[in-house]
Length: 348
Image (cartoon, rainbow, N blue to C red; front, side, top):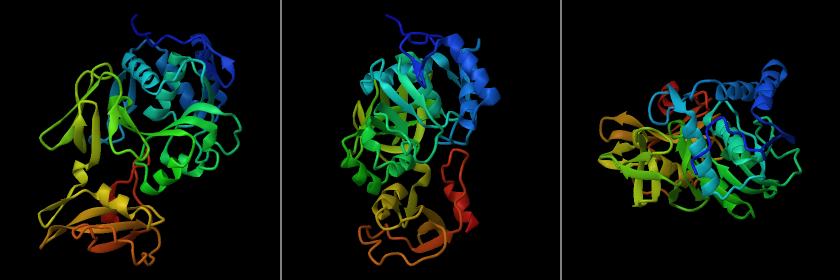
């Protein structure tokens, strides 16, 4: 049996308690655009784009594989991505699902596509920092960013299966999540691959790819993704990885963040992970030009200056210890909330 096309709406699909077909969704879209809250307006605009005559959606990339740009994403590829997610995470029709992500970005759009293609009973709320705060429903599935999970720790048991994306899950948050009864997965993906193409239980080292996704490396040891049911040509990333086997890889860090200090290659993300228990604010490490070392390692911390704990650097290797600590009042970010490291350091 061939996959459903993008005009398909499963007869089990519900949005906020109501069974809706394609016509109902288009009517709802107009109401959302005219009278809705800001997050509903974004949903309305997406629904009208989805059910129009074109076979693609235009989306802005987050800048993961290069400068942010508008790309065309095939609607059928989004359907295929939804089916792959349903299969990988064993998400059946009729399950109760919470949608609490902004629909302006690919992850929020894909939650809607999965819901009407797979036939979910979906509650949709504003993409707030603490989405479970006023909810008592038990959900089979939801998707959040790590900050939402962090703010929902006391109520996360209300969600049976949760996927996290949009930012790396810190070591400190991983420890808190591992004690919960919820099955929680960290995902890997980007706009170009139509949200996640791989996932792993939080705390595990290796990501496992979704069905029909093939992986390899280029000469920089960066991940190359060939999800043939999702995009037309391979996506070459800037993520340095270790390939475990044809279905699994370990993420090491960003190629464009790698610091060459005195001939030693340092991955900022690995150093940041080791610091996560000691710095209670946002921070990152970055290379800065140095006459002796080529690049010297700088720790950049957001907010007013303060004294770091004396043992903050005790888990760092000889070359991983920052040569300087810089405080910046506020980090510079992309529209999707990702920190622009080089511009932030320049601002200091």
